Image (cartoon, rainbow, N blue to C red; front, side):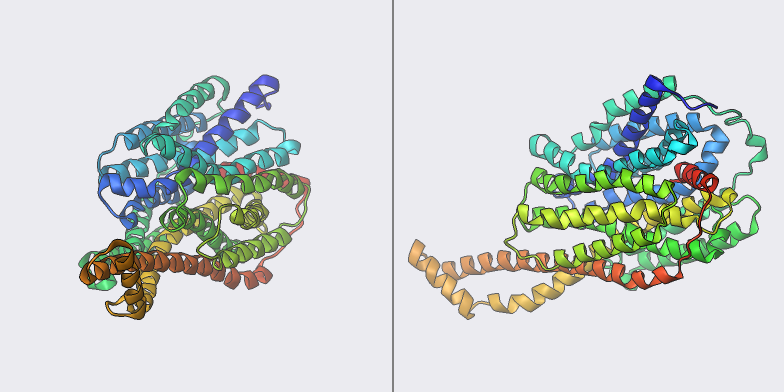
Length: 524
């Protein structure tokens, strides 16, 4: 099938990138609305984070299956149905009145969204000749960098002027337009969706993967609040997760047409690359989750100010991404970029863990520039590195595994951040609370000041003093807990860096580079 030209190519570029950005925006647009959503739904911040986690779990499950599903149903059909599913689920999220209902529709939205991200890049690459696919990778990379960061800004604006349901409803007109344009301008590939009889569906593998990942995420998410293995629910889910994931590995190694070909992880290069990818997903998702909560809960930023502080620095990454795509398509080795990107993200995390409580929005600018460049320097090179040492026929599967691990790292990171913040908050509060006891020097001084200003009697002034000090301790404890979480992210990145020496570099021919770029599009 010849690549489209002119107007048709431009429409495909706009449609596929818009669909991918829409999906990526929804990974982070919720972050700035968590505080309002928790109040509206009558739950705490830790519970409402399931709105983020359920979406990430769905992505983890669907991403490694998109290649198989596109082959089975036909890529164009699968893409359009996924877009309709995503748009419908967005509407239902906006109409939800309870947390459980919202979490269920967010999971369904994630099923449709995971397919959008993967298939959009595949269709975009087919719109370019092989020699121009580095340009396509760069264009798509701009969306990868911009999408998650645009989410908090757009979400913040909508939260400041409207209410949280609109962060989901805004997808509807975009979804309708993108679906219509896809139906008109995207052509079916020859033989698309006509090989169903030759494809065996690995129902057992898919079921085991869903059960194992879902139960594991529940354990990670709720472990701290449920007192870990003192909870029967945690014990049962831990057992189900261990058995399901163990059987999943056994099933995928046994069948001829596995849902996820995990045999490829036996390749040392791919195996080590997935560790880097896991940590990259951990840092990317966790930092975008922790920062908005810190900014609003502790620093007093509005939702819009929270998102805006992220947006401008991210433009540095947007500019860097197409340059990375062109350089990699010309055969520049990915390893130096991966190392530099991880070092930059480590620096960002440790610097962020040392900010003061009175930091302003402008003071964060250069920290976020370092973060944006770290992401741009590592994301595309990790995709390229994942296929070094693999046969071209295994490129799509290898990259699909790598991308599943990135999403899993993100889901794991959000759960770990929730638990870690809760634990560190309790520890810091315990350390600080002794200073606010009735009769302490600070409490007595504050009570005396209140009495002199208001004329309150001693008991009333003491009660007011303790209330003020308690609020201060709460704020300081959460602040220190969030800084500890950024430090934890930095430690993860620092520990994984020495593994760079276990990665191999293989010089690719132009044909192999084109095949790798094509595989990245089909499995991303």
